[in-house]
Amino acid sequence: MALWMEPGSDPTTERERADLDAISAIKDSSTLELKEKGNEYVKMGKKHYSDAIDCYTRAINQKALNDHENSLIYSNRAHVNLLLGNYRRALEDAEEAIKLSSTNVKAFYRAAKASLSLNLLTEATSFCRKGLELSPSNEELKKLAVQVDSRKSEIENREAQVSKAMTTARNLASALEKRDLKLGKTMYQELTGVKKPVLDKNSILHWPVLLLYAEVMSSDFIEDFCETDMFSTHLDMMFSDSDPSLPWDKEGAYTWKSIELYYESGSGIILSKREVLRYLLEGTAGSLVKSIGDDDEKESDLYSNHSLTSGKGSGKWIKVNEKKTLHDILQQPNFIIPGIPVFYVVSNCSPFYKEFKAGKWALP
Image (cartoon, rainbow, N blue to C red; front, side, top):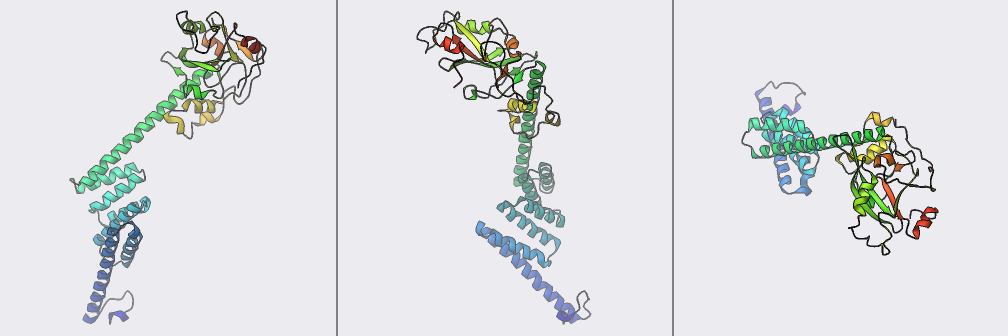
């Protein structure tokens, strides 16, 4: 009987050949039963997906079917792995199915879908294209190809936005460095948000500037203070005779003639070059970039990671000459810009003025 034949030997009698054919038929039937059982498990829902995979795996391990049938089983297992979110396994099964049968359209679809889920867009495009060559009217493949193209466009747009943000931040950082400006950690961001300076086409800096009324810690915000503007230009508009008094200034002490501007000299830590770039990227598409380049790792800027002491003048508060430009003031050696320029407004007609000048007032 064929059951007692040596492994690898050929049948020599009609009886042996008949026995082998019968054994092969039983094995084929068993394998096909496993395949159908797997299909049934898939229809029964998620709780039975692992049972379906087990059936398909056992059918494959039987090695009883031809390449075409085995391709279908691999493709079916790829389908279940997709449903389970096992995208790498799904791709491997789909690729094996394609190797066994290059006309298995469903295998191309599942390979493309797994590739898309793994963000392997080049591979996904290739599988879609080859699948559509076999079945040009396949709606599922057409829709998937559109999804792949859409994902490609999203990534390209995001990369373009990141590149633009990086270029803008580097240009700003370079402009700050050329002007010998020192940037420190941000203050009062709850008042200003993520406002940043802007470099125009003529390489002129435009700053958002915060004015704080030290006496009451109220604020005004100048959206666009060009570095070439004098302070008097903006104060003329803010404190013109035609404008009403500030709501909290019941005594009318804060007028154009009585106000004085000050900045806090040399306090805080100056940001390194890398930290400046990180700050300038905040709120942009480049904010999540992990590496900002080898050049920035060198921390080559002159003022990296050290603090400055107070300059000359009335304690730590330095009076601003309103006839000076913003650029003139920001370039002072003892001025560390806390993210954006911050100036403190006091009135020499207010009782608070003496307290401020005597150095008895401190930031809350």
